[in-house]
Image (cartoon, rainbow, N blue to C red; front, side, top):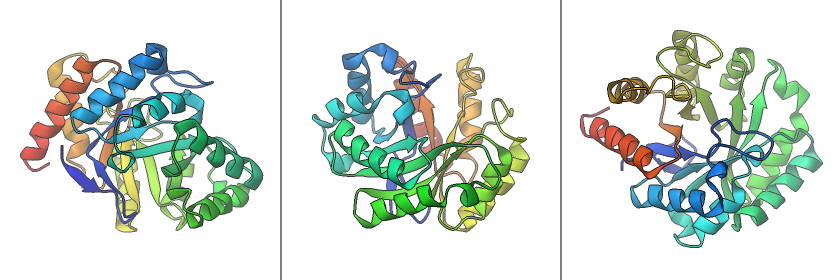
Length: 257
């Protein structure tokens, strides 16, 4: 699979990421519902097929599954994102240290402030931002950023220098997005111009845009055709889904998208 630079973060990632948080919150997701061995094996199968970018979060409960999968592959062959809903210096720093234990790693590649919904979030949570900056300086994480669930918060992220990575909701139909595709794309273009790494989620609209193979291909092709989006994460729950998405991404990559 094609490996791309995630903006100017210095991180190189596979074009496709496997998400572990479909319908995820409160410590569970469709992926963790597969069971401990089920998700571990799916992560390893994805890795075998070139999907070396793994998206997780504290709220998904998927850290232990990643820890077990990492026992079977070189740590430096995987890029791991996780996310925190904590908003104070002390709780964010405590979360990062806990994440390291839960994933069995001495660093996490990317940590995002999860589910930001206020346009003035940098003024509300400067301590959380400072905590992640300190964690990066200590080598505990390699990059920090945000996952937004509000268009105002998303626009603010484009103008906030501290933001290095953005997980953005984007698809061609506006399903489960914070604004229309053109508005979101314009904002992502500003982010990319500033050097931020951007990877897309809700690419298949939680499955609503992938009821047929042609629909799935159209949805993936739309996002891969956006120069401002470096990679994308798709929540997958079976080897067949991994194979299907990998095949589409590889085919489109070969065509220059």
